[in-house]
Length: 182
Image (cartoon, rainbow, N blue to C red; front, top):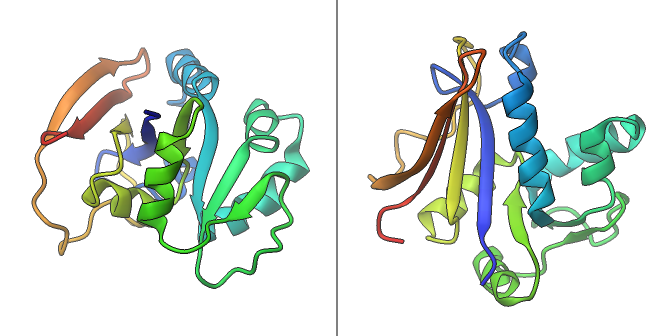
């Protein structure tokens, strides 16, 4: 069975929105190597509507970037009830019907890991639905001050277990979690 993963850059105060605003110079070689390993083990990406709209405009226009070279051609599925089926970004398909049923089916297919990229709403939904196998948080040594956080005050209490944690040379704490009940 394939694994569904998510990795999010975050600030010490829990902000995950627009990490380029608080990463400053803390993106180091270790984070780069981790991203490379993540990309190497992933062959399918799940996106929410907002991430799709933002990334479909940005990444095709920056084709020389190493992340663009990975994200542009990869198989992408978009969770949206308002986008139509005619998505313009290469290899992007709108998820038909129920997200949970689609992800369960996708996990049962042959292939490498499935990654939720960006898409905070999709990450939260799949975590609480028991469909997210691993959540990696890359905490930058910075306080963002404002912006969207991953979790909401109305989220249910959920126990996680630490799978792995490392500290990079520039002080980023990279921690991978799984649900305790998984």
